[in-house]
Image 1: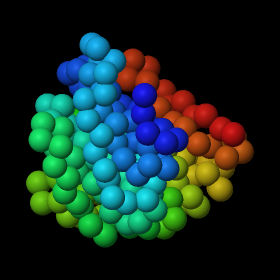
Image 2: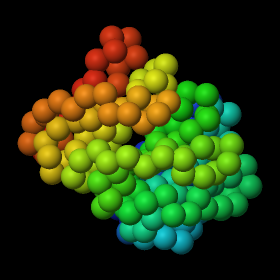
Image 3: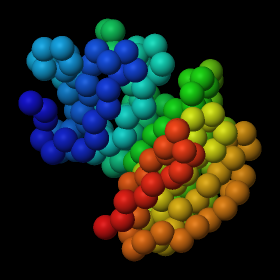
Image 4: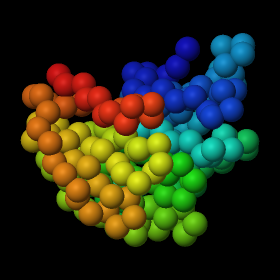
Amino acid sequence: PAGAVPKYVAVTPDGKKVLATNWCSWDLTIADTSTGQVTSTIKIGGRYPRGIALTKDSKTAYVAVMGGSDVAKVDLTTGSLAWIRNVGAGPRHIVIAPDDSALYVTLNKGGQVAKIDLATGQVVNRVPTGTQPRSAAISSDGRAIYVVNYQDSNISKFRTSDMKLLMREPAGHHPIGITYDAHTGHVWVACY
């Protein structure tokens, strides 16, 4: 069981917990993967929690809160909640660098992608990507991120070191989901 309208699901890298953001109950469900039992529900305290990114040690979850401009930081050991404030308008999806050094957050309302330095918790860059950026994916080496631009029906590729736009490619109408295949280096896009 989860909360009202679960939107995004993620499994901790150690495989021990499954997390779901609940769009309408404004919380995060955490369950034990071995038993299937809910171990805790964390009130996010912001409208429309969406994307989840997890640190390699499985101790921290970052949650995009799409109804505002902030990203929640959840300690999965204690359940405590902290915030990265003023990330940008409408944080929707988050990917994390393979070395846990940075977060990349799509800003659906702002038409941008934000880069957050996790050592400082500060936004270090915000770049335009397109109209209504939705989901994002990161290459396995962490050098590039790929973002679907829903209203523009295309995808953008950025170099993560300086957030320079490397390419923009057409996609089908209303691209919504994206993933990076580590074995082939291909990017797959799902469209409405």
